[in-house]
Structures are given as structure tokens and as C-alpha cells.
Length: 327
Image (cartoon, rainbow, N blue to C red):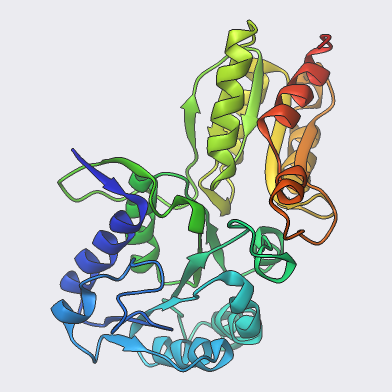
């Protein structure tokens, strides 16, 4: 296996799929001449040419709509949002057109399109550039939402997303693009809607995705030093959710803490908590606890940003709360 960066895994996935199917093209701001704002598309213009790797104007609504139209015409677009904070400008096209077209056309138009880009806070970018859109996007029928945390998962899931005949939202993170991990040399796919146990354990289940997974793993290591064995579960796909895996883990550990970068009100973690407490109520030995970003606009100051985001310390305390143990 090769040890590569998260951005390289995404680039490999797009290159392999573009070589396999000439209907696939990449469109977005700075994806071509500049090799991508985060160098995810490095080398794709040289390999596939300007008809398939296209720099767009600075208009997310415009190029999102162009992508939907291209998908209706039989092409398979990959639309890169420089950040989902900017992608908000294209939500009309994504939600009112991409997600609903199959239904509104009575099955006449599949929309095989992937909208991908970084989601959530990066580092000291302020309140308008640090939002997590998981809950908004998973709340729309007709779209699949993927949020991977490792290079291995990113490549396998992006390839599956590109091959899917439905709109797929692919949530990345600026903070993970340089993250390295092992990726097989041979081709592989990861099914959409299948989660993964990143660390087995018996005392409590920690559910986390995207960059919060790495915070959860760090918390599990600290808990291990204190004699607490935490299982870390990565759903990988948020819509549809691998409920069977989640329920099985909770029925084993009897306790659940969910780590979610989004705000707590009407969050993705709230949906997971609701499903668990409905299906696993008799298996729980404590209420489900959620660790979310604080319900405030993201501050610019570094120490305040850190205070808002979920942290190892907050996760450890939440685990102790559900285990009813002291500090």
C-alpha cells in the first residue's frame, strides 16, 4: 500500500474515474490552471484537457446549475466548491433542482452529479467561513451525503459517489487534506451507506465523522490510559446512515457519546441520538450524550475557536458522565 495524503487520494479517485468514463468532467473555481485551491485536482488539466477540467467563474449558483443541466443531458459532473461556506450560494440549484429532479420528472432524469469540497471550520477563518452544513444537507430527500475521515475512505467513497446515478454531497475538510494514510495500489470501492469501526471497545461507543473522528480517536487513547475502553465508530456516510452498525455497537457497549462539529440544535447527532433511543432504549445504561460545537458564531481568535469546537477534554468528560464516574 502507498502512504499518500488525503488530497492525493481524492485526486486519484477522480483521475481513475475520468480515465474509465469520458462523460465525467470536473468544474469549479481554480480547479484547472491553478491545480485546485487545495491541489486536489493537481495534474488533471494536463492529463484530461480543458474540455474536462474547467475553471468556472466565481458563481456557485451558476456552475452548480450548469452541472445539473449537464447531468440531465447525460454527462457525469464533479462540481468542486472551494468551501461549502461558498457552496451555500448554490443551494437553490443543489436542493431545488439536483435533489428533486428525478421525482419531479417522474423518473425521466437521473442526476449523476457529485458536489464536493471542504466543510466545517478550518483554522481562524471567522464565522462566515467555518460553518458545518451536515445537518442542512442530510435533511433533503433525494441526495446522499458522504463525510469521510481517512485517505482510504475518501478514495473508495469518492469513486462510488462518481459512479452513483443520484446526486451525492461529498464533505471534506481543509484540515485533513495533508493527512496521510495507507491506500491500496489496486482499485477498490467502498459502498455508500456502510460505516466502519475504527477502534473496537466495550465500555462506550463514540460516533464521529470527518475531522472529528481524529479528535474522538485521541479521546479514546486518553480514556484508555484511565482504564476506559471506548469503541470509535465512523459512519462515513451520513445519508443514508448505517443504523445497523450503530445499533450493534450500542447494544454491545450500552453507552453512546456522539461527537459532531455542527451546532447542537437539530444536528445530525440529534438524529442519530433519536434513532438510538428509539431502537436501543432497553440496551442503554445512560442517556445518549452529544458533544457539539457551541451554539455561537465561530470566533476568529484562536483560543476562542478552540473553545467552541468539540475537544478531547469535552469528549472525555462526556464519557465519564455516561459511565457515572468521577473526574
